[in-house]
Image (cartoon, rainbow, N blue to C red; front, side, top):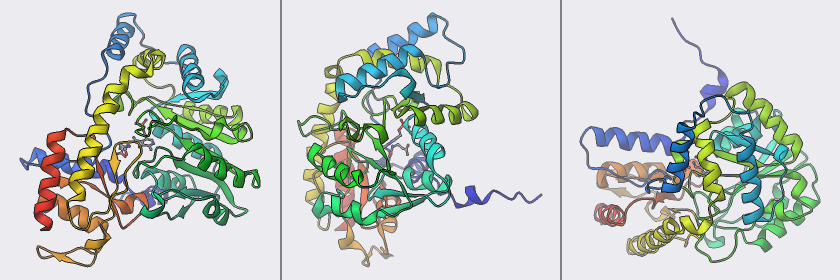
Length: 396
Ligand code: PMP
Ligand code: GLU
């Protein structure tokens, strides 16, 4: 029998980050000595206070379906977190807990996008944005930025990208993959443009909020009173608490959007995992200083990888302000033949590094920038040193 898949799924690209991580995993299983700098996944154990809360939840016999939008106690903890860290007031009916921030983003797209609606995604953007938008019938509108402007979209660029079909602006700050962080003034300038276009909803993905090396407080678009009614603030515990596999993300949103997301989720996955939800209550109630040790270590690794990559000819790096990625411009190598391989684009370069240096990275093309590659420094200092040494060797 010939199975005919849907047009939607045929047009959907696999997640490039997960695909590269899977390929690196397969090669390792075959005995190859691969160092993976592909996946954005902290390599720390889950903090003990979170583990203990999960164990307690199991012992207290939490086992059933939860409310679709999350336990009331968790939504209270999320409201507390939004207020404590972001000066944002959200009522429980404005909060939705989902199976990772990724599901929050998917819920938002299903809730808001009609066929042909345009969604502005400043490049580079996180891999899944464009594909979630396309899957739900929308049209991603890429706004190119460059290393010279620290990969940030300006107010003028935003203004130029808006059309009568623009439904949303969608970005992450700190940004995956560039590590750029929009300052409060920069966000204000974008908000001023949006004041002239009241139909545009903003999705502000703040999942890397705590992984910030600038010393400046994190700025949220929803904290501007004139934007609050049309910003969806997405966050989660995957990155800051090293809980990627526990799959809890959450949003604070205008009530109508939160309810629409809950309706969608109720037909697709129901509430998120009950034990993980209980543990996240403790995570969010705990002072942020308790997870600072991970940020401090990422900061050391950031300095290390920037220094080492800076010693390789043709790697142009902007210093990332947050998250745990570097996004070097490697256009110097495009069109060159190295060890018999023609490097036509960043994807060729990334595959070349995998084959020759045994280092897994992700092509910038997946993030909307074909001149760069992404390296995750959520890896040990030894792995970073060895990986960059190998890259340097194969490029010499
Ligand atoms: N947003 C960004 C910018 C990310 O890098 C990730 C990475 N996983 C997510 C959302 C999704 O996070 P999760 O589903 O693990 O909460
Ligand atoms: N967000 C991480 C990354 O960009 C995890 C992988 C994913 O969910 O796509 O690598």
